Image 1 (cartoon, rainbow over the protein chains, first blue to last red):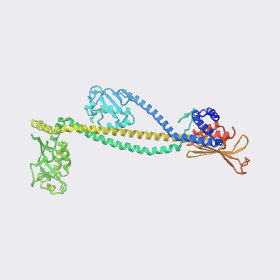
Image 2 (image 1 turned 90 degrees about the horizontal axis):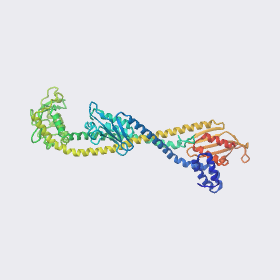
Image 3 (image 1 turned 60 degrees about the vertical axis):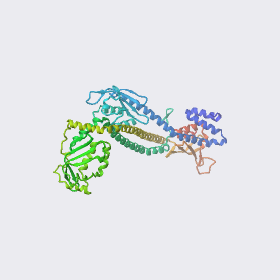
Image 4 (image 1 turned 120 degrees about the vertical axis):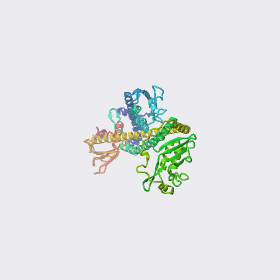
Length: 196
Length: 400
């Protein structure tokens, strides 16, 4: 920071104004301007100075606005995901959630097809980031593919959903980060008696 | 809205700053929606294709079981009386009486019963033989079957079915071929050589209940040969079909990724649009509140806003030394933060001006106030606190 009599005065004034960050920025510029010859700069400098300073600020305003928006959005997203976590945990078919990384994996309780006594536990992995979003459903109670869902042709050998409509809906719910609705829909799909 | 030191702080996210951004977002939003819509259609199409391929894959995977089911279904076709598969793997279909429609008269002619044979090993269109067992006429077995068969538009689909060893579809196509005549040519007009069919007997498929498949020894033998003939082709197809499904699956996954990106882009654009609009509305509301407060100030004569520029005119002010200022013109640019204050001196109020005219002294007040006050004004401008600014400028002029 430039030092000198004018700068000193400005520092005092800035302290009085109690807006240190903005003031310091102004002080630096003021000091530079005031130190310059000729002395008659004093009068117009005060007007143009404010303009220059704030013009510079206006140019960065939009960036600042975007930063505020992004921060706002991050906070909203975090709150939304926390709420999602609570909602998924509260679903009756859900045993546990492994989250934090990709995929988010939800372990289910026993799910049986309507009208069938056989039940299976599934691991539903949600790939919500990356280039290939989607869902993989693998059995957990027996072998990964020895499940009613696979035998019924609801999922393929890689655990991907076979029904075009359900799969499309999955992708759309992933885009919206509505994992609670996604898990509900998948469990309903696994419980449904209709072969796809 | 940001708060500084507990005070309301109108940021300089002004109309001029936000309106162009908002306009861009207004344009971008329908584009983003359209992009997502198009990708959705592409994903749906790819999903439908994949479903068809999977069905085919399933059929191939089932192998002999699937072929046995296929043979059973073919045997109970209402137009099939008997199906045999010889040791040379020739499939012979003995039909029920078949009627052919004359498009001109809309009447059916009874062609008779046929034997259709097809070599399952070759499975080419040239291996198909059609013989009228009960009523051939003038060398015609059927309207388009004379010394050779003229398949007309049926040749393409039929070849496709035969190449894919989809025998039931191939047989069904041959039935449809026999039941129709193109009366635009001589072979087709030969339909009139056959007698009219009894009333309401146009298509036996509509009049015959499907019998249960027989399970006697001969039947099982025929079915076994059918499976033997078709299975190698199914198996060799399965490997390439598996590859095709995997390729389609990968392409679909990529497409889904793009679709998710497009949906998120659309959501983000919408959120940004709403945020910009909200900020703009807040700014405009708060500025209007400020303007109203300034307007109500007892020393203010008028306040005008034009775009981001606010102009305040004060009433005459009296300085501490009793000299009169006819008024102050305060101009503030909310976007750039520029502050201009002009003084208009009362006529006759000063010795160094022509008599009877107001003298304007641009920026004079700014030269008289101390730096601390000036800094405060700049701060007030940057926060768009118009009332506090006007009040302090007036106070400074009045020597308070």
